Length: 381
Image (cartoon, rainbow, N blue to C red; front, side, top):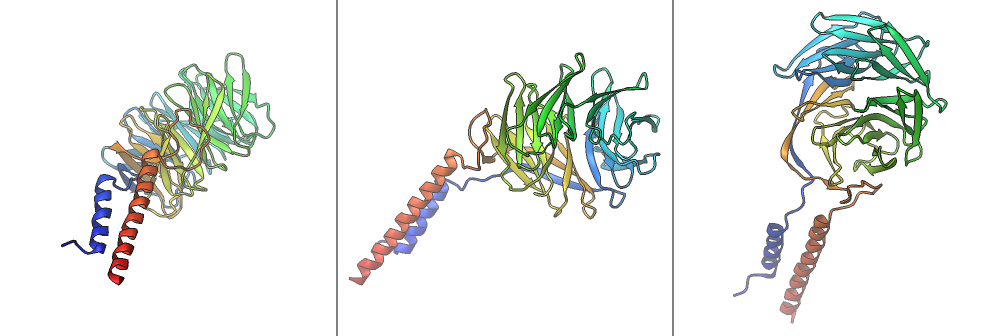
């Protein structure tokens, strides 16, 4: 005796699901959040030192903070310059460097002595925004208001400033290549640019998307420049050798990517400020994976990756006021955005395996409906 038609339909669907499980856009991971001791601190930029401790700046609280990752303990240091407005942080040789936007200065902090030292920028109201330190110990920074790139030689207490060719470009993120070249983003200029310290020449490259608002920048293990495009909602890449741009659309619309970092496996990590997520992009497979932050509307901003590939980020919302940690797992599956290493500008699309699963599912549903229809029709005769 044959089983009823509806039971046959159920068995068909179950058999399909066993063979072709629904593709999961997920990765093994754990996000943990740590409340910052000072309320409404507005923690923004973040960095990791050689011991694995996490450092970040508290813009509203006018503090520098350290997080002992091993013991999950915070330590905060009051910046001794009133309303300094710390905006960026960089660490070199265990010295912490800060860009103090409202104080118009660069400051150093020596953890062993727990002392600050201030260096006043020559240009008035320069608006130091982002900071990086080169191999020689020279401190480079963007002057957002003055439209310049600044260089501080701490040993001589001397500054040198380089005017940017594009007027009112509003330079933001800055990073340094292994060859010593200084790369930076022009938010309003819509360019990724490079300064050669030897020739003092600045070369500018227009990004692919118009009005992209490129912001934070970093360099991967192959020397390529990666950056976030705030307004166009993309991750961008500039191939230094080919002088060619590529980009990829972030799956979550209007996510407002703000900061970017590269881990030792060349995986790109970024914060989605309005999307309330941490994003992951694998250049080899051109695939995104996104991780939801449990705290709602946390406004993640700064991001850094330690030597163990653990991702650290700041949550700037006044009510969230946390630092987050994302520990990676071993299995990686994500939302495919094409299968090319060139990372062309692509729209959200499924991988071939996903498409096959979806089409197969539709076919089997159609078969099941047909069986049910014919069964009922046969009974009606």
